[in-house]
Length: 111
Image (cartoon, rainbow, N blue to C red; front, side):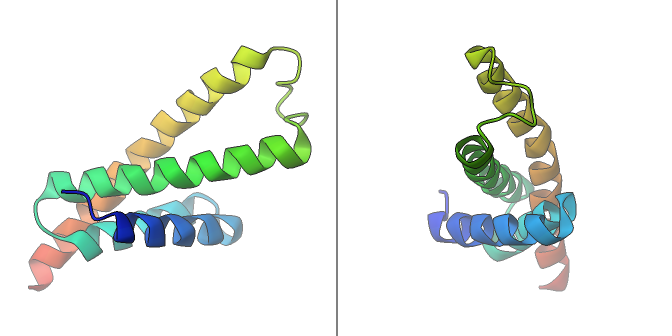
């Protein structure tokens, strides 16, 4: 079962920390998500992936609205934004799963 409260708290944390620390913010937030839910390693990984996916979606939508995707050169081809969004979400999901798994591992080792 997914703990949506933890996912939303950690997604907000990932957004704020990613502004300051870039990818390090995502890793810290996913570690905390995995630690917060504890349990089995796959549970931590799933929560970490959800945290990063929600944060990445939010950041990309804000970038699209504010900058109209000019820095990415995505204005000419509408489908390119969707493809690059999914590529970035999958790439970020790898960091999310690693962070969530490590967070669950840390909680398991401390208790």
